[in-house]
Length: 292
Ligand SMILES: Nc1nc2c(ncn2[C@@H]2O[C@H](COP(=O)(O)OP(=O)(O)OP(=O)(O)O)[C@@H](O)[C@H]2O)c(=O)[nH]1
Image 1 (cartoon, rainbow, N blue to C red):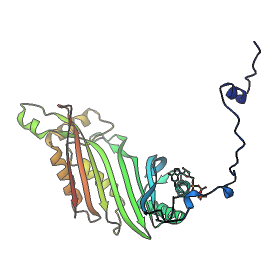
Image 2: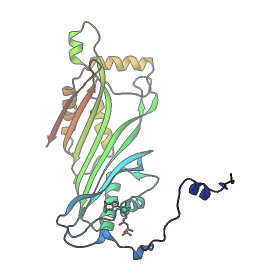
Image 3: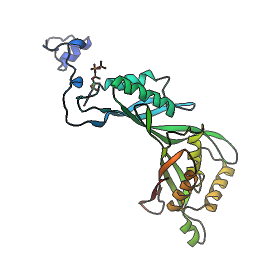
Image 4: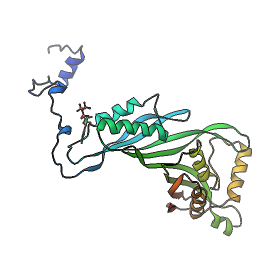
């Protein structure tokens, strides 16, 4: 048997079935390539949103660098075939500094760039990221890092912000009021997942700590919030706090709503609590929507 020389990658690739590229007839220089996206004629409808989604990119929230999952889009006029999608990430890169800063002002500037490179009136984004923050245990005050999911939804049209929404999702403890009431001792409790989606008034400046205000409204109204570190004295306090503050899913969303409703920078909200029941295989949930 003749000995094959497989000492180079190319030789190994051919050995495994790779073939040489064909000599094609189509241009290889950009200037000579047709630009289908830029074709102009009547394409029957204008489009509200066209773009990319599930774009994973580094983001910065406060002192933490974390990961964002983005949807970016623009409008598209009736006489244009398509958008130049590569310009979306080019725009993101123009506003990238060790991550994309997740703050409304910064994201508005990014959308303004997108509007101008795409020559479109409207640009929008929807990003969800892990928000990390310092969390101190309730009695021994031990610092560790907690997290929630945070979502920014933003749209600009011409030179106006037309949609500005903030979403937060965080797990809490809920202790069942009914179980506490009917049982000789104990009460079952479970992990509740609270989600809020808030429409913010684009005309009103947000307080610097707007995220913390909303998160506090979600956690403080639960039977207990969750902590990364609990020593024995902390655990006793958390357990007793939950027993002293039983909550149905209905109670919890109403109490969160009561905290949010008076904030002048909030136009409306949707709140859901879903309890991963510890005495059932199914979940319990409640959801409410409110517009001022
Ligand atoms: N409009 C459109 N583009 C797509 C679609 N699917 C993929 N593409 C993208 O088309 C992109 C290449 O097109 P452009 O961004 O217009 O590239 P270009 O024309 O060289 O870019 P400019 O120099 O900015 O005009 C690639 O990034 C593909 O991801 C689609 O369904 N619609």
